Length: 491
Image (cartoon, rainbow, N blue to C red; front, side):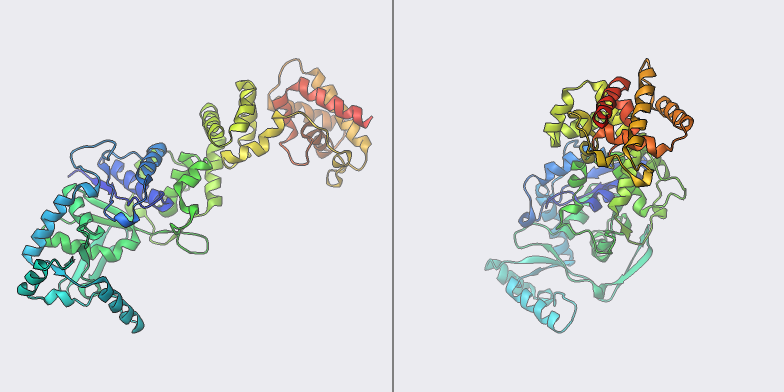
């Protein structure tokens, strides 16, 4: 049997970072088993529908590279992929449940249901439907239908029956039917509820494995009862724990901090985001932390998914992103950063455009190990694109570096100027470092006594890249010109 998984979001807003994790686990499991991953849009809750959210979601998944094998943009044999286009199918199957006695009409008004809920809450009882309409006679039902009394249709849950299923992550789970409400299957507006539509769709789309958040565990027996009512095969279930913040609070969809789009706008690299999310719940039984997508697919195993909640730590995500910035292909990363600047900081992008690509890439090559994500790049790079300005003289003095008077500063500047004049070509950063360290030792000076003044002189600031990096970026000639100008001010 071909493994088929699905991601079935509701178009109620942006894509949640936890939902991206669900997509990832479905994708990895499917590809590991040479199966097919499907995307279905569950848009029957019209009151919560957000215009444009579907297009936004599809665009994000495509940009991340988690492209389903079958979805609205790539239809196959199991469409349509919007639940609002499958209403005839739900009508056909709800009629079957009514005929077989597994469902019943409910004519209770919203006001009665609200009053019932308030009463149960005041008595600290579980808030469930009291089954008032479950025992209506056929004559009473016909009278109300003839009078056009509004109704919903509910599942007739069997009394006091244990419902068991095997969870691929949590093992055997048993829930008694007395804990299950007679849930609504068809709402008063004629649209199906999630619990009904998801079962009908999963069956007709041949879904074999369902991987979702563990908050859906209480709903799984409801779905199993529907499968049993139709005499359908029950899919395999895997419930994975949700994401929480460091304070153990769930990642609420009410805050922008959980939107995948936010992290893409800060230009976290896709490979870093995927790598980090995969390892939040799944332990591949190795000390290795960095995996390509193909390696994740090869190693992924649902049995290794942890049951405990996973803390979503942005500092940990920064660590992964920094690694991929340092180790990734320079040309590809520079291209991605250029796209980022053009989209989110066009003014700085125009500044870069006035310089040659070789100069820009040299700066990016030296600075990429300092940034966590692209939005930090301007902070470190902008000094290389503006007119050089001299720092105040007192900034050159540094007790920690044993620079207590200007004579040491002038000695350091002179030493660097002499060495830079000797370079006949543009040296590598290692050549610069080796040459200067040797001369500093020869002059019996401390490294800090020489490196700190040069760093301040070249940057004009207290905080900057290292001296060797700046010399490599500026080149020997421009570096020497800057240092000569600063030395002249001291003289």
